[in-house]
Amino acid sequence: MADHKNSVRTDLASLKTEGRNQNTLHIDELSTIDMVTLMNNENRVVEDAIATQLPEIAKAIDIIAERLDKGGHLVYIGAGTSGRLGVVDASECPPTFGVDYDLVRGILAGGHGAMFKAVEGAEDDEVRGGEELLADGVTAGDVVVGLSASGGAPYVLGALKKAREIGAIPMGITCNPDSRMHAICDVIMAPYVGPEVITGSSRLKAGTAQKLILNMLSTGAMIKTGKVVGNLMINVRPTNVKLRDRCIRILMELGECDRATAEALIDELGDIRASLARLGK
Image (tube, rainbow, N blue to C red; front, side, top):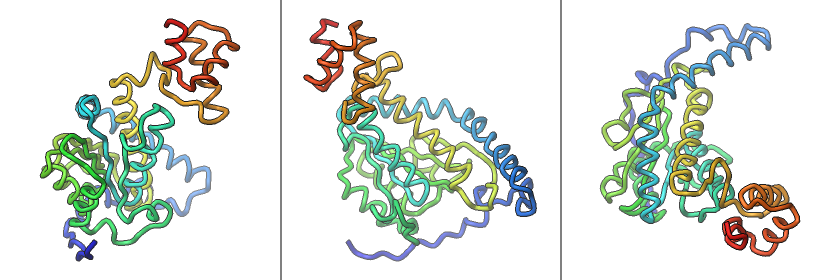
């Protein structure tokens, strides 16, 4: 892959995510208990900020579920903390919902190594964002969710533009209410959580907000596509001791059988749905 010059950003000073929090100007002078109390108070704004975005989150879930039902995929792409959160959410879908590992995917600027060690400058390359989206195999049937706390990471913007170009549905999660993402995305989720406790450290409130929205998107889409019965993980696989026990308990409840029967079926079939069918449920 060819090297590309980094994009020049002229909007950084005006970004709301870069603002200085007037409540924490003297946090370095506080006792430890006062420090964490102040941080906790700041975190309380996240829930209210997300509440303002629930209609857009619901809209996104319905679109994602529709695309998944038609054979599409959900692809998160981001840089830094935002991108790592996308990778985490994607990686948790197979063990939780029993789906294939490529159904929900995360792409991180800087590649696999950036999950563990920051790759400086990776987020600044707009062309590479589009290239890596294509290299991942994204097609017109997919949904691409760009993750950028500021809403202006060039790598993410490039990916979203490429998603639109190939016919995939571009969506965005940002914590700036007037970001550069807005003009590119079909659905934008933009909870405004205010300036961070430590100026510009968007791993804090912005990261929390993005994580909560990702939880809603993947969980909501899996519920809508039949991966949950009641509030039970009907597709979970018995791949370790804890999950085997969970499968057994779910089968006991849905199959109305005793533990010995559930254990035997799970150990034989390794699948809750198949076990329910064997029980005639």
